[in-house]
Length: 411
Image 1 (cartoon, rainbow, N blue to C red):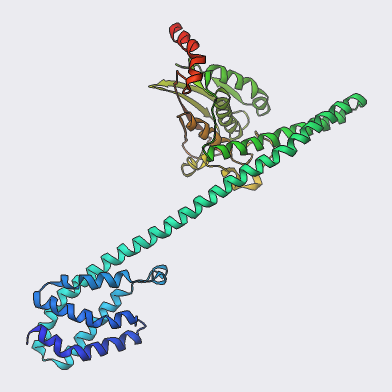
Image 2: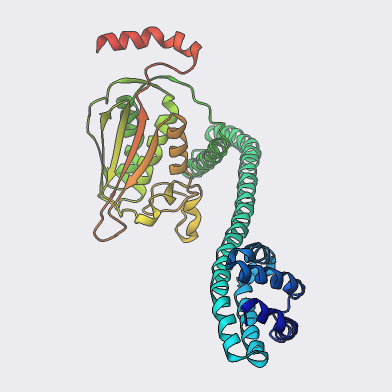
C-alpha cells in the first residue's frame, strides 16, 4: 500500500491517540491539537510530492507561537511534540497496517520528520534570539534611563550643595577674621585651619560632581587659548610638592619633543586632567616611590606619559577605572585625604580626566603588568592630546591668530 493511502487509513485513530497523549504528557497546547488537521493535510502533500517543504509554514507558525513563559523557562516545547506525533504514528500504523505498509510509510515519513526537527530548531532559535534581543533592548533602555536619572540627581544635588557651601565659606572666613582679632590661642587657629581645609575638600568634591554631570550630558565647555604643557607640568610640580614630601615620593619631569610647543587647548582643564592622573599615581604608589612624566610627539598629537612605581592595576580593571564612582567599591578605604596610600574616594578623578581629554579630541588609557603590592609593577597612563594650532572658534582664532603665527615663525 502506498504511504499516502496508509496515512489516510490511520488518520482518525492516530489523531485521537496524539491528542490523548499530549494531554497526558502536559504537552496539550490546544492550538497544536486543533492544528493536527492542517498538519495532516500538509503531510499528505509532502508524501505525494516527496517534498518535506510543504510542512515548513506550519512548523514556522508553531515555533513563532511560543509564549513568553516558554521563553523565560527556556523550554523547547516543539521537539517533544514532534516526537509524540511520530511515536503515535508508528504505534497506530503497527496496530492497523500490515508490516510492509508500515515499513513503506515510515521510510517515507522519516525524512520528513528529520526535516521538521531541523526547521523547528532553526526557527525556535530565531524566535529565541528575537525574544532575548527585545529583552536586552528593554534592559538597555532602562539602564540608560537610570543613568540619566543618576546624572540628573548628581547635577541637582551638586548645585543645591553649592549654595549652602558658599554661605558656610563666607561665614567661616568672617568668623576667622573676628577670632584672630580677639584670640591669641594657637588652638583657635588650628581649629579654623581644619574648618577651611574641610570646606576646601568639600568644595572640590562638589565641583567634581558638577564636572561629571557636564561631561555626562555633553555640556563641558572649553575655553581654548595658547597652552604650554611644560608650563602646566611645572605648575603641577610646585602645587603637588607638599603631597609628594608627605609621602616621601619624587616626581621627575623629563623634557620631550613637543614639551615646550604651544598648542591651543583649555589650559585649566588640561591642568585639571593631568593633576587628577598625578594625584592618582601618588595615591597608589607606596611611600618612597617615584613618578616619572615624559612623552613624545606623534603625528598630529602630543602624548604625555605618567609612570609610577605603585601597586599596578589588574587587567580587568584597566578600563573600569575610567568609569565614574568606581572608587565607591570599598567603603573601608575611604579617607578625607586625597593622597593617603590606597585611600578611597568618590572615584571621579580619572573619569573627569577622560572626559576633558575626549572633549579636546584626545584620549587616555593605562598599561600595567597587573596588581601586586609586593612586586610593585606600577602603571603607565597615556594622555593623548591633539596638537591643535588654531582655535576652533572664529573669534578666538582672530584673537590668538597673531600669537600663533608668531610662535610658528619662531620655530
